[in-house]
Image (cartoon, rainbow, N blue to C red; front, side):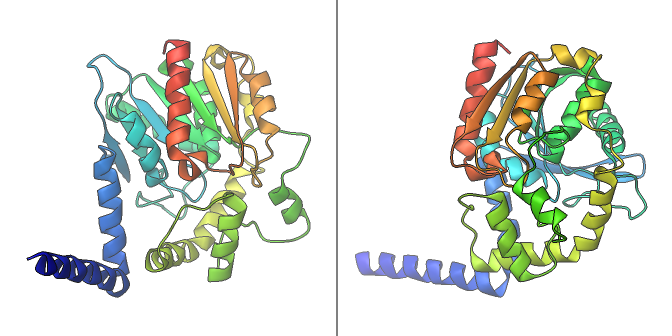
Length: 316
């Protein structure tokens, strides 16, 4: 009997591995759905005007509790928050959209992808969802967006959680900007398998494990979007106002804020945390040792635990 059970288990494992290599697209979709389910998140499509949004949401919260809205970074999507959300959704409602232009939300070629345009679209989405006030979290470009959102709609923002946020001016230049100044391509946009692998080293100290076939699917998706991402990049830097110009002299300076930065961030210099603290005086800073640009992907449990502890300390 034991041998039959063992044989059955081996056959299941073999079949699963075979499926991973034969149908990597389906395997990736199944893996993502499993991750979302474990994090109490469900996906939905929400149409706002003529644009369709892909949104993950869910969690257990008191009826009168404000939701936590999580905004991904450049080239990312809502699933960048899924594993961090797993520690959050047992006690709160989480909403994580794919921004317009990213993930599986609409990405019209001629759209305005500047920070103010993304803020206005996000506001319209949340209004349609019935969210008139919330806590906000954002990584990289997402941090820039939520900071701009707080400046535009301060009464609708209960708190900010900014992880390696873009959009602040620092005297020191990051490794990525020094690299780009030498004429090298921005490592966040990939056009080959080699550039995809290199980006992992730029973004992470310890990249999350990723099986080869699933990595191939994600790599293919990013390479196909390279031209689109280049358009978005050009609308961010040089055309979008920095937080240095947006936040001062607004009620956003009164918003409680947790600033998190990976100590070994090569994309945005860790001095950005101090710059943000000057803009947001009611802030607390956490530096995460041996972590890169995306703490919520590299150390999701610790990232979430730090946030929950801050919310408790701040009585939010």
